[in-house]
Structure formats: structure tokens, C-alpha cells
Length: 238
Image 1: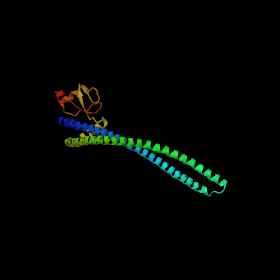
Image 2: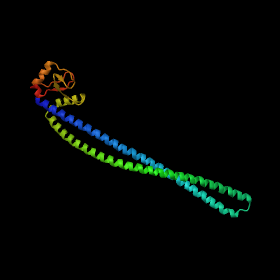
Image 3: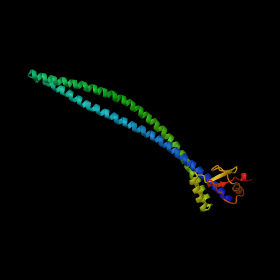
Image 4: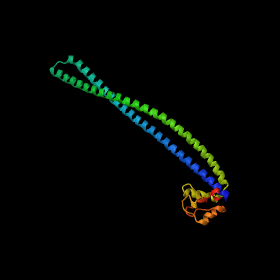
């Protein structure tokens, strides 16, 4: 019986270590996910700004087309002035030229304003690109470091898993099932140490006769309160 208890205690130690390393892996993976999300968000923001700048460039191009068309209209109207024979026609052409020149002035102002906005936007885009590149490099290095740690933990988990399988082979199947049931029910702790007459798993005091039975080590004793398998260290029993 004493050998089984020792094997169970070793099994729980391995399982606790595996649980701890898996929890650490999950924490590192979550941190990596946050870093990847940070880069993704910055990239999306940059892409949105690039799209907005492209829209401004299209507006400017459309205005420049309109400007060229108005300048061509003015040129064509001015070339027809020499062919005008009546004052009425002269006045009509004059109004057309005046309207076109006013439109040209407005278009030039709009183009100038857009050009200024595009230049300012370009400065902002360059700053965002630099920020993104710096954070991408920083996060990439951090992610690689954490992935390396995750891999180390995985190697330790694999080794511990092999060791626990060897222990399980030495234990009765029904005891292994009971152990796993208790782990599921008791937050991963199927065994509990006894100190000062109390179960450290639930901190409840044990009946004196039950506590005395632990010293003999003849039977496997379960805590009457939390049902965990009770263990008493050899030096305490002595």
C-alpha cells in the first residue's frame, strides 16, 4: 500500500507540473496573440489611411481633369472672339469666358487645398509605417522568444507525460480511475497531506482513529470530508 501511495504522490506531482507548464504555455500564447492583434490593428489602420489618401488623390485627379476642360473651353472661346460679328454674340462669349475663369479659380483653390491635405496625410502615413515596422520587428522578436519557451515547456511536458505513463502502468486500473475522478472533482488535487490531525486539502480535522490508521500505512485512507486520498509523510509517522 505504501508503494501505491508513493506512486500516486509522484503521479500527482507530475500532473501538477504538467498543469502548471500548460498554463504557462497558454499565458505565453495569449500574450503572443495580443501582440499579433496589436500589429493587425495597426496594419488595418494604416490600410484605412492609405485608402483615404487614395480617395484624395482620385478627387484631385478628377478636379485636374475638370480644370483642363475649363481651360480648354476658355482657349476655344477666346479663339472665337475674332469671328464674332455682333455685340450680342460678343457679350455672350464674354460671359462664357468669365464664368469659365471663375470656375478655373475655384478648381485651382480646391486642388491646392487637396494637395496640402495629401502632403500632410503623407507625413502621417510615413510616421504610421515607421511605427508599424518598429512594432512588427519588436513583436516578432518577442513572439519568437516566447515560442521558444513554449517549445521548452512542451519538451518538459512530453517527458513528464512519459514518466506518468510509466507510473500508471504500475497502478491498478480502478485506482487510476479513482485518482482521475478526484482530480476532476478537486481542482487537480486527488491527494492531500495530513498535518496536525487535519487534511490540508479541506482543512478539516480528522477523527483520531482515522488519523492513527494513517501511521500504520496498511490501508488507503480517504478524507471523510473532501474524499481526497490522504498521505502522511514518513518522517511525520516516525
